[in-house]
Length: 210
Image (tube, rainbow, N blue to C red; front, side, top):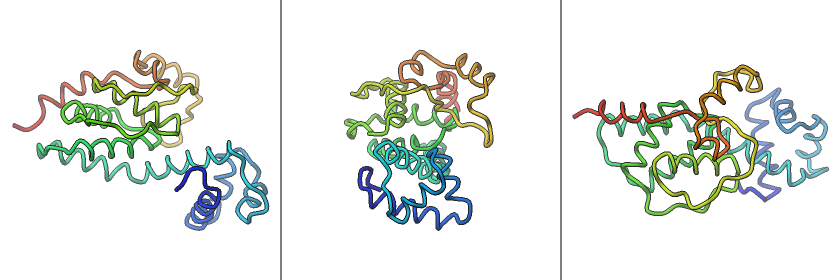
């Protein structure tokens, strides 16, 4: 989907609502903090979303797509690990970009991607992502693998990089306290609630089949 193309974004909204059926319009309205009527006006072309809502829709689209692809991409990486397969750096980086669209990743998967990037570092990177959260996640990932991303953190509110249980209230005070205690200096730099990966990466190294 093209980020700044109104017709593409509205067409995506229509297809998504049709695909998921009843209740999806309400879900979108809640995600975008607009009324159901406003969303209906967008879908039939009576009004157009402003730039802020266009950005929101695109960001949600990226997240939904990332969540949909996450399992298959993760399985491919673990298969390469257990089979001791060399990975093409460009494929690895493209896979990392796709995974970083998801709502969150497990600590084991984050450690695996970082470990692979150390072993098969890309020689160059694509343009930094326009979506601030994805930009910060990729910057964090690069530095976790000892690589220089070539771009600075986007000035956003701190968000989680870690996979959370379905239905968990991310605004819960106890959860926020726990995440802050786990957060590393690298996470603070990139405005992400992260965790230390060194021990997990060390286990990946010595557990790899001979």
